[in-house]
Length: 351
Image 1 (tube, rainbow, N blue to C red):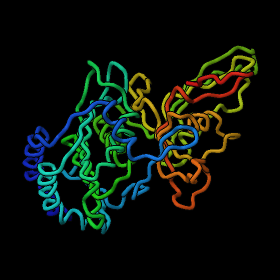
Image 2: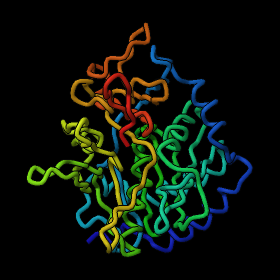
Image 3: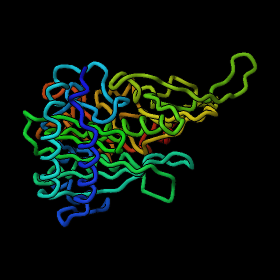
């Protein structure tokens, strides 16, 4: 019924032209040090020493996300909002080529996962015609690993926040390992663009992408008193508590050797032998956290390393993570090594 809205030959030609333009003189390939210096120029600083940014968009554009390609990647029942974007997709993609050729971009290359089987290499390009958008590259790159000599595949994400908000949309071309975000400056589009692509490609390679957190739990068997270690999967959609429970200590008795260890908080890839391969190094979490309920996450959020967005911070640099007057989706990149809980008089890393 909707076949006429798609043009596979055009998508192939678009991809070839795009890959050539990404080698252009307006594309600046940078490292983590560069991104940190530039992004922090546009941040406010909290009393903890952490950096805080605000974005114009504070949630993802699911009703404006479309999939372009062969019948196997298309939405079976597109919404009216999808149909409108599909009808104009070719013109928008032509504009993307013009913008990629014209605007200044920074490019960072990172790696998803750290194993010997499935490690997508992620190429992120963000327009810095509005220079503060460099923070998207900086924050996202901190969720990934340094690239190494590991198996691919190779993914590309193009982010052009400067597109007019009336044309804000997400164009995914899964068969070309390509995602494009337009007209939004929300970091979640970058995170999910790569992870969504990784889940699709994992399926193509015989793996199963799971929207789930994972953790290791060591507990004493109530029958024989022996310590036993379990792998735990925590399934859930976005903002349903995966990060909370992945990082939670579950009320275990540390004095008896019980503990939990966070592995992932969002996406894993299941192999045929039952192994769960990880995706992210550090975590992009919601910030509505209470210290008495989510100790490890709270300690990471108030550490100077936290990269915060859309949280309520007053003129003194004090942050109220539960004040959602401006935004109900405060977010942060928190660092795995700062997920700590107090045992005795010491803070102990729980990962």
